[in-house]
Structure formats: structure tokens, C-alpha cells
View 1: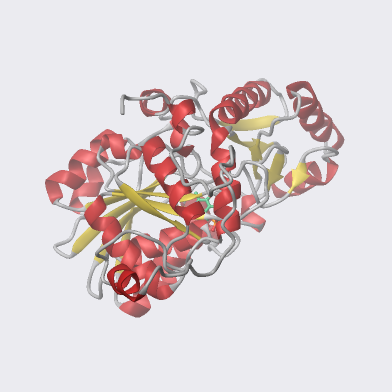
View 2: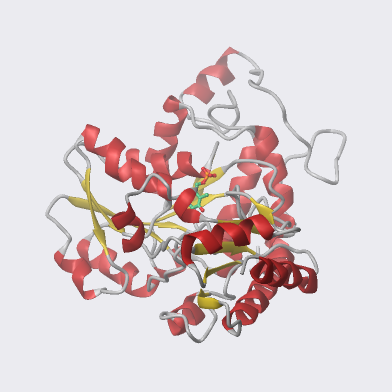
Length: 391
Ligand SMILES: *Cc1c(COP(=O)(O)O)cnc(C)c1O
């Protein structure tokens, strides 16, 4: 088939239909599938013919979601998982073994940090963090037993940007698996596989769902690597529910238009905060003041839906600001139609030590805003009144 564009791929999948010829993809809420005969059952289990056996292994809704995500990310294969963390975990656990080492960017999601820091050491898998501000230091941190590089860009919540082209070349030269958590960018803004990532991981809970309804994740990438990931998932059981896959596939149909508006609103919030006398600093990838602004412009279509800022007056003022919000939700999620404010130091990254938090740019007064799809005047109006009231 000839090359189609992102929006079309997100909507027009060649998926299965029942004899009822549904226009919209139906929901296959079934735990298992019936064999045609004994011979087909044998052939299915022997991997000689394609087909569904049991929803822990595969389901038409999960397959449709993954086929779409692969088209949008430019990857060969993938699997859908029950959560973003299941995706992060199995993308590492299925491809690594005892004695291996992971080189990771320091600024990773709080639970990813727990996997590297607390869970994997029990299985003799070690890690080293490298700083994105010091690319030259990465090569020296690659050990003889390093097998994987894991990064998040833009990172949550520091919004640090890593040069994917440079990293893709480094991984290829050193024969390492490059695994990129692409949750913040979504496939609409950035495609890590294009720059040489072998594995692309997602929390679909955020912008991919986009309406704060379901938890989900995906591991996408090279066929031969996904084969290992699929084996691991089939036997350890982190499969996505078909209902969530159905929801998420519908969500992808509107991803492009939603991301356009999320990014437009986030950019406007960032520029409003940047000019505000009560605000110490603002970070947004497409603001000229962002330290990796030109890199963000190179590898991202738009600046993303998340802005961080630090209000004058530290942690107390930060808390007052959150309590003074009237419309924005105070929640740990992001990537929703509803704008959300979060205080990472006391919530998503509270399990880190003070020093660890500072090392990844989480100051006590840092506030993360996920710009939703409400009218921009109402979003900025609420932020502005909360800044005034919290004085
Ligand atoms: C939320 C998030 C995750 C975890 O995803 P869940 O769906 O909550 O399990 C992983 N990485 C990043 C960057 C996230 O924002």
C-alpha cells in the first residue's frame, strides 16, 4: 500500500470485522477463542498459523491497537500492556539477564527509577545514570556488560531533551539496545525509531488515551526483540484488557488534533508564565529559554502538552497556589482534556531522596502543568488568579 499520512493511519486500519460489518471496530470482550478442530488447535499452539487462542496471548482489539501504533511510530512489531510501567518493566526484564548493566538518563519516571534502583539489583541487573547535560560522559559509562540504554525525552517532569540522533548512533556503534520512553511526546510529536531506537515504550494512560479513563502501555520495536518481549509477556501475564485496547484505539483517531491543541495551549501557558513577575522560572521545550530548545525543534514536531514552573516563595507558596486553583485539577495524572496541576516533590517523585530529586531538577516549589483542551483564556485565567491569591 502507498505511504499514507499520520492522521489517516490513526483512523483507517484494516482490522477484522464480524459478519455484521461494523463500521467502527467492535469490542472483542472474550477471554478465549474457539478452535475450528483439533488440527487447528495444534497448529495454533505450534505457531504454524496465525490466530487468537487466549486473551493473555493476543486479542483482535490489542492487535488492532498495536498495528496502528506501529504505523504511527514506524516500528515493526509490538505488544500492548496493562500499564505504562508494565511496558517499561518487560521491555527491560525480557531483554536482560543477571549480570547485565543498563545505562539510563538520570531523569526518568519515578517508578522506572524504582525498577532500576530497587527491583533489578535483586536480580543482579545493575545501572548507571548519565546526565543529559553532559553527552561526552555517556561513552565512558558504557561497561563491558552494558546491554541497554534507557532514556526518557522529554523527561517527566524536568522536560529535559536528549539528542536521539546522537544516541542512536552511539547505541549502534556500541551494539546496545536503545530503549526510549516516548510517553511525553506521543508518536505524533516524535518517532524515536527514526533516529535508531530499537525499542519505543509508552504509557498510553497519558496523551494516547487523552481523556483520563484507562491505564495502558505499549512496547514497540524491532521484530526480533519484540519476539523476546512477547514470549516474556505471554508467560508472565501483563496483557492489556481488550476493553482498554478498544478505548485507546479510538483515542488514537483523534491524537493528532488533540496534540495540536494541547501544544498550542501549553505554549501559551508557558509564555504567560515567562512574563509573570511572581514566577522564578519556566520550562517548556519550545520556549527559546529552554537549554535544549534547538534540539527540541529538531526532533519534535511541537513542544508537547506539559509546562513546569517555579513560583516565588518556595514550597509553601507552591502548595498555596495548588489549593487556590478553582478549575485546574490537582491530580497526579497528565495528558487529559482537563488541565492538571501537580506538585512532583510531594507526589509522583516523593519516593526519591531530596538529593535525587534535585539531581533531576525537581526543586521543592516546582509545579507541573498539563495543559488541557479547555478554552485557553479560562486556563490562564485560573492560573493567574491562583498566583494572585497565593501571595
Ligand atoms: C506515567 C508515566 C509512566 C508510567 O505509566 P503508567 O501507565 O502510569 O503505568 C512511565 N513513563 C512516563 C514518562 C510517564 O509519564
